[in-house]
Length: 126
Image (cartoon, rainbow, N blue to C red; front, side, top):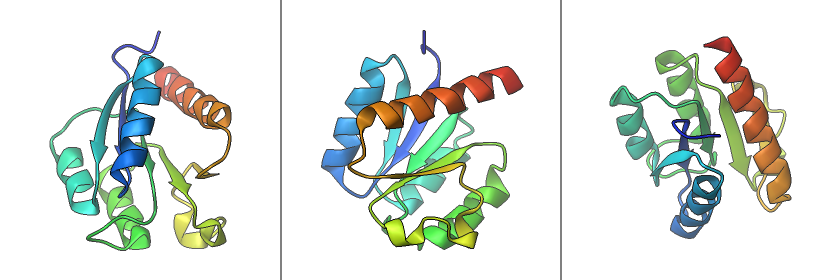
């Protein structure tokens, strides 16, 4: 069902990346992952088509707020979901570009549901 739908996943923690990558691959998604802001931007510049970006706001090599501004200028069409334990940033005006903010540790079923909603909206919009 989700074959051909590519997700970009960015998190500094390799264990989190591995877990989420397997989780979404088991759901049929194709997943690319990045461990830093630089790596994320490199993948974006490769002109691959990602249906959405799931990212932690706390990535090495660039402040997450600045990274979001950079992404907004480079790929305004890609939905971004913040997946972070920095709940104090939820609702921060500089994060308004992000479509959603999901706290790390929340139920994986909720994360899966939100991802599926975004993918569905993207598929309908393309």
